[in-house]
Structure formats: structure tokens, C-alpha cells
Amino acid sequence: KGTTFTPDVSKESFLLESLLADKSLQVYTGGDCAFCKKSGVHRLDRCSRCRVARYCGRVCQTEHWKSEHKHHCKRLLQLRLEANRKAGEEEAA
Image (cartoon, rainbow, N blue to C red; front, top):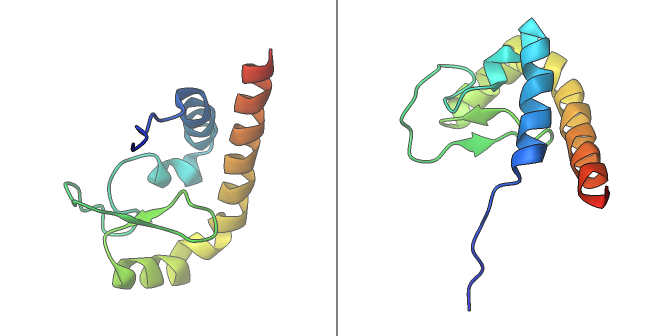
């Protein structure tokens, strides 16, 4: 039997709240490519380090890394891990 995927809403809301609080990170809040802003793409690849930034392809990922994402990636990873921790604490309560 397969398992059904259910998104962890508390984790997502903690992360979204953190991203919205920092104007420079708001580019990562949408469901579109973080570089070219293309929406409606069937499958977006995520940054392998932070797992927050999404891209429609390798070209966009490479160009965004050069121009901006390399300065945000470590912070995004920290925010994602913090959201996971907070969601875990909330579950335990």
C-alpha cells in the first residue's frame, strides 16, 4: 500500500512567516521560478542545499545563484530548519 502525502501546514506557515518578514527573501514565497518568475510550470526543481528556492530549470538556477541566491541560501536553510524545529515543538505540546 502507498502512503498519502499530507503537507505539514505548521512547518510551511512558520517558514512562510519568516520569509515574508524579510523583504529580500520574499522572492521565495511564491510557487513560481525564483529567477524568471515563470508560473504554471508542472515541476519546479528545488535548491539542493536550502530546499526553499524553486526553479523551472538549470539555467535559471545557475543564473540566480550567481546574481542573488548564493547570498540567501544559508539563511534560507537556517529558516527551514528553524521551522522544522518549531513544528516539532508544537507537535510535542
